[in-house]
Image (cartoon, rainbow, N blue to C red; front, side, top):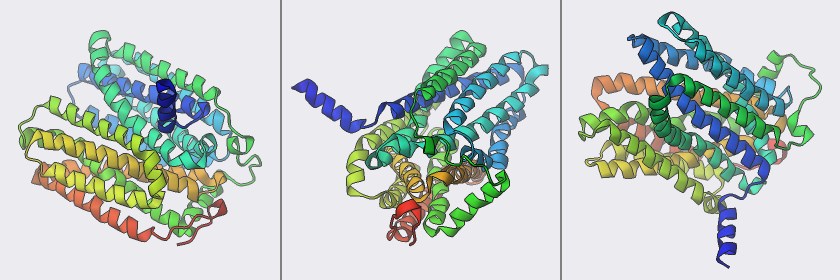
Length: 416
C-alpha cells in the first residue's frame, strides 16, 4: 500500500512521459557539464594570464554572438528538422569544447574567444528547438509544470555543478573537465536521438518557399500584430532583473553589509535552488488555481518583494529566507512566460518567437548585471538591490493588470 501511495505522489510531481524525461536528463547533464567548463575555463585563464581584461573579453565573446545572431537560430529551427537541430547542436558543442585542449600557453589564449563564441552560437539553435517541441512531448495540462522543470534545471545544475566542478578541477585539472563537458553533450545527443516527435512538429515547414530573411520578418511581424504576445515579450526580460542583480552584488552585499564571507554566497545560491525545488513541487496545485498569465504577474511581484527584503536584511538567516523566496517566485514567473509563449504561438512560428524572447532575456540579463556593477560601485549594493526589487514589483503589477483579460483561441489568434 505504501509503495502504491509513493508511486502516485511521484507521478503527481513528475507526470511526464519518457520523451520529456530523456530531453530533461540530457539537458541537465550538459548544463552540469557547462559548470565544469566555466570553472575550468576561468582556472585556465587565471593560470595563463594575470590580465583581468581577458576575463571581460571572454564574457563579451559569449554575449555578443547572442545579441547579433540571437534571432536567426529560431528561423532555421522552423525550417530544419528539429530533432536534427537538437542533436546537431549537442554534437557541435561536444566538438567545440574539445578545442580548448589546444590552449596550452599564453600564446594560445586567443583561441578561447572564438571557441566561446561558437558555443554560444550553437546554443542559439538548441534552446529554441527545445522549447518548440516541448508542447508535443507533454499534455497541455502539464505544460506549465514542464516549463518549470526546464527553467529550474539550469539553477539546479548551477548548484550541483558549481560545487562539484570546483573540487574536480582542483583535483584533476581544467583539461580533464573539458573532456567531461564534451561527454555530457554526447550523452545529451544520444538521449535526444531516442525521443519521439510527430512529423509535423519535427519539421513544420517542409516546403521552404521563403528566404531566411523573410521568415525572420514573418516572425517579428507576428509578434508585433499579436498584442498579447507583445506584452509577454515586453514582460519577459524583467524576470531576470532580480537574479542578475543578486549575482553581481550579492557577494559584495554579504561582505560589506553583513560581514559574511564568500562561502555564505554559496549557501545563498543553494537556498535559491531550494526555492526552485519548492516551486516545482507546487506547480501542479498552482496550475489548478491560477492560469499562467495571472501566475506570471503575481510571481514577478513576489520575486520583487523578496529582492527588497534581501536588500534590507540585517541578518544572514534573513538573507537565506529571501533567497529561497526569490528562487520559488522566479521559476514560476519564467515557467509561466514560457507557457504563454507556447500557447500564443502556432507551431510553425514557435522557434522564431522563442529566439526573440531568448534575445530579450540575454540582453536584459547583461544589462542588469552591467548596471548593477556600475551603480553598485557608485551607491553601494543595498540601494541597487532595493531598486531592482521595486522595479520587479511594479512590472508584476502591470503584468497582472495588462493580461487579466487574456483569452486563448485556436492557432493562438488571441486578442486582449
